[in-house]
Image (cartoon, rainbow, N blue to C red; front, side):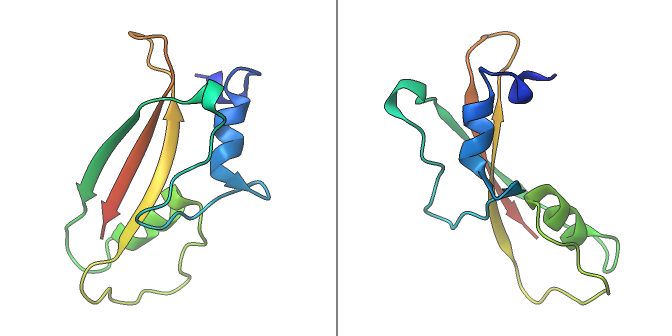
Length: 104
């Protein structure tokens, strides 16, 4: 569970942070890793649906490391947020980079 904070995981964490905050990536961007640390990227598209005002946008903001909106405002259409999440699954023992496309 503490792999990201270990010396082996720290370069992966640093690639998604900017000034100790999660970096916001565009749709076609991805973290820059040195060739020696290149890892496979596993992509998922997550579509969040639900009633108005239940916290879908706040959840995406919290996961993305951006400020949570202080007041409720209705999301018009679909907002797409891309975030990266480095992990080291126990089964493979090899780091992977999850690319999550969150559609709210």
